[in-house]
Image (cartoon, rainbow, N blue to C red):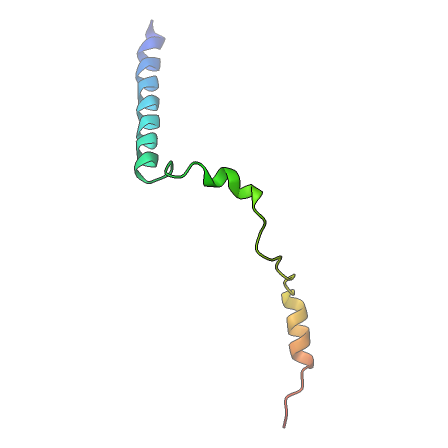
Amino acid sequence: METIFVLLPLALLIAAIAVGFFIWAARSGQFDDLETPAVRILFDDEEPRPPATSRASKTTADSTRRVPE
């Protein structure tokens, strides 16, 4: 019986927090567009990006560059 005096308020507190998070998500627009994220995976990307050069190769190339005198 003593356990119910602890668990019941704890369960009500957790339920109130969950309802609060749901209301916050609904008001902030989390549920506005449910269709686009599901079909976004079906579309191709624009163009593949070229591989980025590493910072080490840039500094090596910069150090060998000659400055006109």
